[in-house]
Length: 201
Image (cartoon, rainbow, N blue to C red; front, side, top):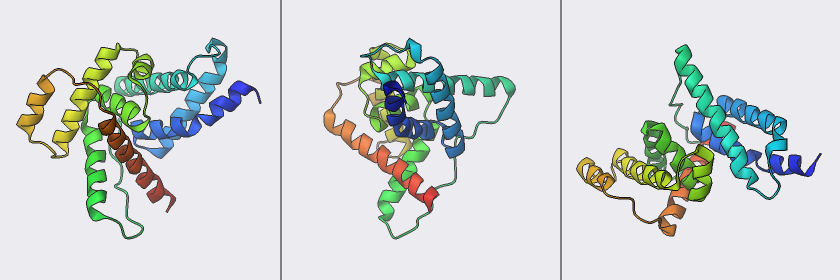
């Protein structure tokens, strides 16, 4: 196995996590990751040593997903956005479970471009510049989508009233705060861990 193949293999868990958050379906996510890996290996001569391999792979996966969605729209294929809620396998904090459920539902209702940015920044902890490269938009657009997506998510989860959320969304994006990023990342990762645990059970 070449050094590049080993590096690609090390990124598979992150690719799978992002794919599952995007597709909301374990089988579809695994298919998406497989397509990404096949394309990445076929195009490995295009990757330049010293550049961000993770961002390169995420770009491939993101483009594969966008192509699938567009193809499904053209063909009139139904694309599910919800899946069965995770069942509890042992006693847990009910309040936390409800919060994760509301977050899951809120993410599903966000516009695709906002949900993608929130997942890449909040779940994967990527820098704005890397996210901009992956989805092919300016950094300012990433900041704007993240700001609007956060406020919409808070509104959908009932954290702030609709009117307050709309007023906040109308204001320019605020600078990124490390504490809020870490809190969002922990919550998103806990949601994915709970979903994975319920499947394993």
